[in-house]
Image (cartoon, rainbow, N blue to C red; front, side, top):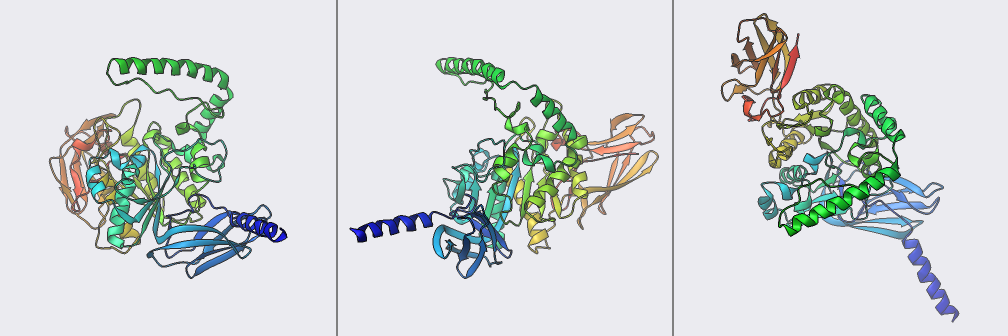
Length: 510
């Protein structure tokens, strides 16, 4: 009897010990670890326990603090396509195993709907599925996410690492997938993407409030005023009435065999008068706090639509976001590549030409960043261009050139550099990064400022050395010049680099 009791207690104790070490879901089965860098791992164990992580011949250990929290760094490792088991020991006893781990290149992808836009919604979904079975490409996805008023330790229970398969690829971020697919082809090492994007989001939802040091004052003040007047109970009652009406309209549409086209009604949140897309900090809390510091090579980012109403603050806000995300990952110059807004007719008070310029201004003021120009892949009536292959592959070309030694590639669009005014004409110089500037058709999209009015002109001479000469259509003094200032700019594009990429729009005023 005593032996039986002792055996039961021993089994119970060993099970309890095995369950002690905890890691967030991003440190889980099927993950990809960054090669050639110290790899951060973190979690919880028993207070003051000795925690050891072992992956093949690589190992590291640390003592947990009084609350059981710990973090450590595995040594820099070579790329490895062979699945391995990452083992965690607590006080010398095996406590947790993370299976099917690869070592390769890891990237964080963020932004709003054009980054969150899935492969399923692209025009190339059939092609993607046909080539998707590749266990060397993995995505950490979390398509369901609960809003959070406070920073979270972990992501949603349904989040996790997934291998690329015909079934899974449809749910992956399209831009991220085409980036990862091409990166794997060029490097022949495993590629992991940690997705964070969510549609409709402003930059301020991705940052802690204390980190919004520049450019956010007006937005934060407006939010605070709304919150001070917010009556959750009243909002809930209003929602309940609207929800019933929506359900009735849906049923009516169903009986009439038509699609419901009315608005969706969202339940109000107790801690904010706004939705998650416009609430400061809320997605930092649920999507960034649980993963920040996960060792990665760099960021790819596609966002700006939600902040395009105020281009005058966009540059400062974006610089703040980039520097702050780098702080969250403890790398002050971590590569950060971003997509410029594409072409779109727009509605409301969206100012896409000015916002694209604000994005370019931000890029010029930051180190180790690059901008993917996308003005040639827009949709006139849809804010979501379905051609995501071009965007993903342009990101990849920049990464190959900047980080992986492919110097034979010129991955850049021509960007505005300087201007010289000469009364009724001006000379605009572009940075072409060693390529030639070419005009593919008659000049269009160029406007000159004269007597406080913007006037279109096609009197433009393009030189291969990266310059264009712009002349006033009426011979009057030129006070400024701009290119591709309309939201729907795609039809007007005429300037390209001889690498096939379109020039970015610009503005200059004397």
